[in-house]
Image (tube, rainbow, N blue to C red; front, side):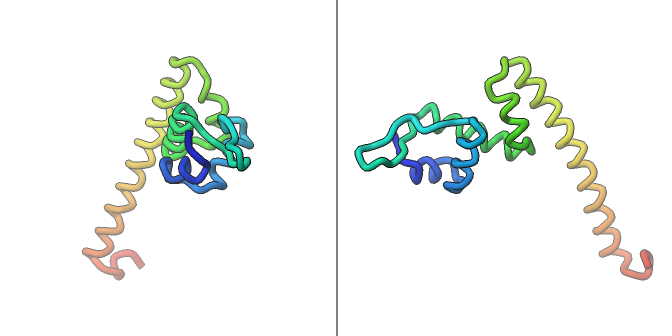
Length: 112
């Protein structure tokens, strides 16, 4: 069992993030110690890491609510769709970077 502070350290998120996960119903403390501090077990640690990973993929908490406990096939489908969005965004960013490099190479007079 670990405290909220320890959980935050393991997941590399703020206390507020964990509180948001709890408010959204995505996770909950496992117990309280004799001082009233919230405690979390390994399953909640894994769940918090999974939520954080899904956020890094670009899912919003509302979207995570809809998929976190879904059947495996639905989770896989949501991940494949999100990967498609990320690939499209990557291509768009690569085009912008290329254009910025061209600007650097050619100078301002070519663009203005």
